[in-house]
Length: 357
Image (cartoon, rainbow, N blue to C red; front, top):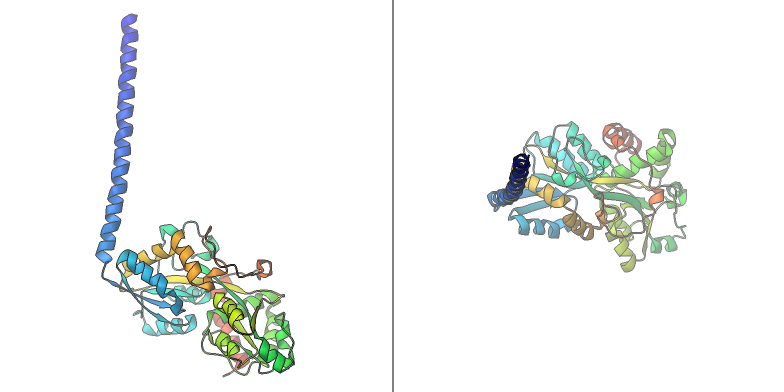
């Protein structure tokens, strides 16, 4: 009996030694795996160092952000600024030979259409896991980086000179007293103004919405061909009211000029800003590295501080942007899928409505 007990004790001790050894081996294996992963990542960056990444962005304000990417990866960034509608037309015309690797910023409608046209490359970054489903393509063809909020910029000097009332709602803009005093960009070119058109149609309904735009058109002498023109021309006093992306740059003007940013009481249109990799990218691995870089929490926070357009509200949880005082309860309840599928019919009807203005 005693011998049996001794044998059992010895077996137990032996089993414990084997378990301990196995745990130590697993820990060593895990550590080795992490080290090898770090080495592999460093190797990837080393392979990409000295290459060039071409980016088309909606603004030149991203240069500091792109420089940070270069500092961290050694990948040089060349970029140009272009509106989303203009870029989409250019990419279609390229017929499989894109002018850049990364498409950075612009209304989601253009990205949705580009996906349908087969112009984008699929890539699902590990950094995108916590971004809500409504702000990313399930197949990885585009991802949102922030929201563009649509509002009004009002030149108070012009209002005073012409004895005009301060507008507080979208329907106010149909008042005949504002004839030739309102400017907005062509929604076929500007993602922001397409967001305004789509969002207001969803808020008002098709019939009432198109009646509104018919009346609004009477007060608009022409439609700008650049997304930033409404802000610039309102600031310069050419117009009393501009329909704009209500970003930090617009709020900064309030301290420098006699202008005011107005969020209409009857609803605020909004749209996610997209980012995507072009199909047939010349630097595909560099483009993937940029997406990973952009979506990290640290860099999302930096991006929020660099570009006020993204600062109103970021899409990555835990990232704080600029507090622009946006009354989020006024955000229009929008079906984002309509931004892509309804783009062509909306723009066709818009063209019929306004003609060659």
